[in-house]
Amino acid sequence: MPPVAGAAAPSPHRAPARVAAGLVATALALALVGSLPRPVPRPAPPPPPADVLATALAARVDVAGVRPHLAALQAAADAHDGHRADGSPGHDASVALVADALRAAGFAVETPEFRYPVEVVLARHVVLDGDRLRADRLEGSPETPADGVAGPLVVPGGGAATGCRAADLDPLTAAGAVLLVRRGGCPFATKAARAADAGAAALLVANDEAGPLTGGTLRERGRLPVAGVSTADGDRLSARAGTRVVLDLRTRTETRTSRNVVAQTRTGRADDVVVVGGHLDSVEEGPGINDNGSGAAALLELATALGPEPAVDRAVRFAWWGGEELGLLGSQAYVDGLDAAGRRALALYLNVDMLGSPNPGFFVYDGDDSADDGAGPGPAGSAALERTLVDRLTALGTAPGPTDFDGRSDYGPFIDVGVPAGGLFSGAEALKTPAQAARWGGTAGEPFDPCYHRACDDLGNVDLPALGLHLDALAWTVGRYAAGGAGPAPDPVAPRAVVPALAPPARRRAVLGHHPPAGARRRAGDPPR
Image 1: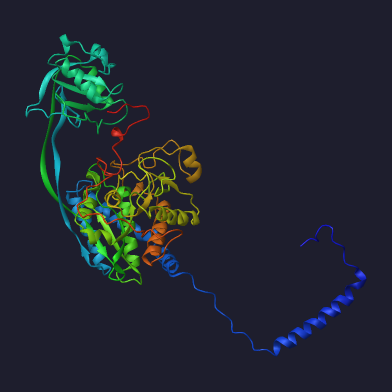
Image 2 (image 1 turned 90 degrees about the horizontal axis):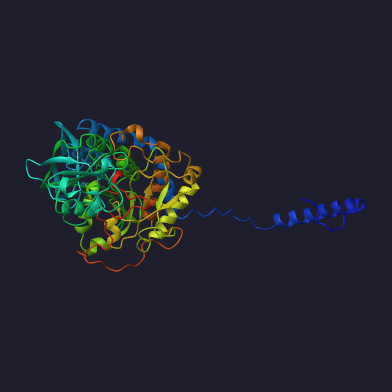
């Protein structure tokens, strides 16, 4: 250490005397110490039990253990029409492989059934020159008769008109016709009302961005069949104005039976349970290896690492939900099936949905709504779960960001009944911003997952390092709370009101799956549709 400013420098002539005096003092001190009882060394206190289990569990899981589960899910899709959608043989195979792996690890496994109505598409096309072009019926649109609705194709404004103004549609040519207008300018309901007033037989709306036009709604029952077509098909139709076309929109409703997969540790308090879950089903468009094979496989690795009889204070319940892509059906059925005591026994819920996006983000659900965006905070205790996940990811060298608690994944039904919730998410079809790319790497201006809800969501669509970081943070958090740890700030098991067993959900979103299809998302400045 340098000398303190302003202090007098020691005299070199006095140094020998000081050294001699120091040696004498030291000798006397040593003689005194030697005559006293020698103190017994005291070991350093062990870390809190919660940290012990959290550390051990995080060390025990490995992304290498996730890879065989991802491969098994891919094989299930490959053997069954390329997908694992609920109600399909691919989903049944996924349920079987998860249940078999859990039983092999020593868990008692349940696969509770739930039933739900589903709309089966019989026809969704417009026939032009003998070819069938895809046409997606808007919600609220009437169906067509069995032989469809036929008429001459009328394209107002040469394909440029949006159909928002009465002047766009000439009653002399629109009557009895199938009209084609462009998306944008006004709600779909306004376009449909203008077309019906003009006497049209049906309305087609051409998308103004790549891909099919899905997820559109008229908000209430319309007066004529209305369907969306892609930009490319809209251009093809426009070039054939005056040609007779046939619009065929038909569905039927049937009841399906599906299953969740649930396993719980035999140890730990059964009246104070840590629940961790994610959905097992994919969409029909692809195998769903990131969405949500990544979360399902991570759960399986975590469950087998923890084992059925760990030394825990709280029991841990693992769940693989069916029917998420159809509207959170499996998790909703599970929560609905619990009585008041069963709901009180839920200490917290952790959700894992898409953990390995190829252009990854590192999002933690915003339990305290500190981002002031969207649906607001989660139930009491959710903020502590967020902090635990954020702290662990930060310790791993990643600076996570918040994502809105909008109820659009399987945490939704748990939030509805007041259960503290949190979870991890690596991003879907939204574009990564420059700030996010600077924070996490990857490519700005590209989706977090360019294969979201597509056939290319396969084994090559998973970023294993990102999946590994999310797995570590998940294991750490489960270990901390399973051991009874209170976390960095108040325990997530905060007192909460008893929710009646059949309480109506307060925050449920009328959506299909955790993110809308690309054609359904609202863009900045769009009017309600």
